[in-house]
Image (cartoon, rainbow over all chains, first blue to last red):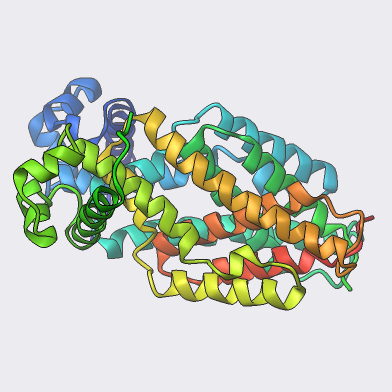
Length: 199
Length: 199
């Protein structure tokens, strides 16, 4: 249960989370201690425990939520405005560019793997992320249907799931092999399939 | 560089690898010691070091290769005989059933994550696996083209990559959320797209 914070309190908390996220990205969960986090965020021990009473575990959970938010943030504004075919293509390029620049993988998946987060909490964080992501994609597919850029018989949810899976699968294979072409091919195909006639 | 082993030597080595894989699946890499592996495989210390001179690291690498082979094995015979639409559907069902039964994830990805395998070795093991897997899928798509079950204008490689990505992405999301429907929807769509007219 998170307490209600003032605007200033929220800003401080956010600064601590972002500082911790940066350290965890750079050095890995195991190598980051509360003292390191205090040093980069210029916070006192009592401040840290004010915002994160359970200490490191508490803070790392907040970092995981932050990284989940970042997955969406990094795709904005494109992801929030998939209203034309051209905008879908711009989003596709953005996704490929983003993953190509970050070959060692998704900070979120690295983090949740390193954390050994309790299954339930990990499922909730990742599940929420996928739900939000899918929602953006569904809105985008629906917009193409509404404007007549794709057929009225396209199944919005199935198509959005297919596009999302192309990204997660392509990213998984990128991390494992350092090859971006799986992601590029699968995502391009998933979008092209939107325009193919259903039989 | 692996030495050439006699048939008996190969069988013993294989028994050690399979025993170690079983332990690692059950308890995780960190919890498994060489003594545990010796106990379940009934081998002496000198036997173990005969086959794995570098000890645990060496053996775990062999376990990772074994688990990569298992990913293919578990899809056979279906994956090796994707010559008709019906056989593709049987493979699809097999894949979904297999992942549904193993929700905690792919032994291979869990293992490579836990191992902290050197990047180069992990890339080679996973890269080889994906190449073999893709090869089976490409042969299957080509067979459908040859028999006229799908259009002659289907791009074999792109389609096979899309199908493979649906599986890896669906499996990734299954592990993260325990939900099988991403995999089911994405794989079903990827196959259905084979039969849609290109524009």
